[in-house]
Image (cartoon, rainbow, N blue to C red):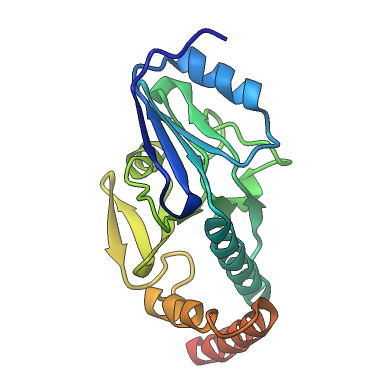
Length: 219
């Protein structure tokens, strides 16, 4: 693979590292994806010549796993069909954009996805993307998700979970999830605060109980 013509920025706060490369061609980006393979811890995001490589910290991965369990428990309790993809690569060569979310899910469009391979030229984008930003913002990735047409993002920062909905090509904050209207950012943050004192099993048990009670009220 040829040398990447670029400048590099790094941020190593709390062991999370982020490298930004300028002037990277789409072909170089694709070659780098192939060379790194699937068995890696880094996340890549690309948009019109700018490549961002993130190496998540242990804390980042712990929070990602907990939120994944909360989403999966939610769909189980509500009996909602779902197909989850972890850090899969979402690419559109025609847009010169691509990103790897911490996790993503097909929910409304689950019936349109065959198998476990996604091709955004023919398949819809994920219905819900999960991004965890403990020390570094994912601001470069949001425009990419907007280009790809991802309708909803749950973004977890130091301040808690923010639910974002795509409207007219821009993400706006909303109180409740468009996909799961009974779930608000405030409720998610309430349970995430409890995670400081509870083990994951106890937290998920409490979360499932809340879902069942909230679903009864909705009825």
